[in-house]
Length: 330
Image 1 (cartoon, rainbow, N blue to C red):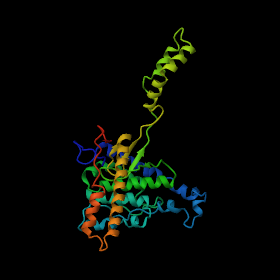
Image 2: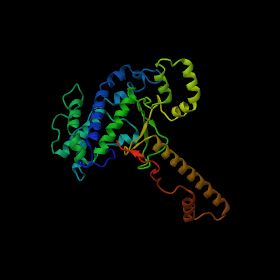
Image 3: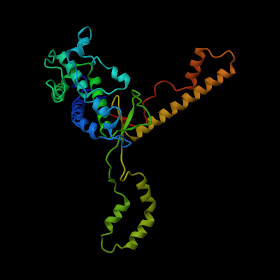
Image 4: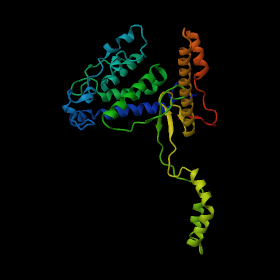
């Protein structure tokens, strides 16, 4: 999950498992505010959500009914592995949000089928009716995350869907901070890079100006001495300040797919590599178009492929090697 080769764990580490549990808690906590959002929330234009053509909008959709129990995972018991993804995912093609109860309870049903302990209670999931509550489902999933991480093939899909749903809730409720997208893809898996801003880092260097400031309290050291000293050492102070990130930040960039971490230098090396590949692709396209104009009978497919291989980018970009630590794992 995090891109680290685990020695004591087959697939995931405690950090991955903790992150999955926190996502589940976040989904459960944010879901509590959907009713209030549907009644009193407003859109970005200031219009009341309850007055939309579909009153309540997506907030009402996300409070919809939950899983129908065994009927939803029946295909998994007829030739498919019980650890596969939940069967109904047609909403993803239509761009429709899936109700929180339905999403989590489908995964609960799949995990229960794998454990051989299917849910035997009522299938209704409305809070006003008997049946599974969202709280009981969230508790079950949190308690079995460690088991699912090591025993099921679909755990990455589970983490991805829960994370996507948490992001959807944050956007809908105007909660949380969305990460800034990077300017280049990950050189390992071509996934999207996200910028994670760090806290401001105070300067800890022993600058010449700080040495002078300490001497200012010494007897006999006046403002005149300070000005003369500053005039002599101003270039030195300026050079030291240029190389320091005083009051600045040292951000990291994390791949959303493989979770590989980049420092600032490795990130800009990747951006440069992507820029060079884009320029090579543009140059190859120009060469192919020019060749088509110069050759009346046109280019054969193998000739066009040869031109693109000669003038275009050469395969997958190589990992930066000019840094001792090009990418740092979590």
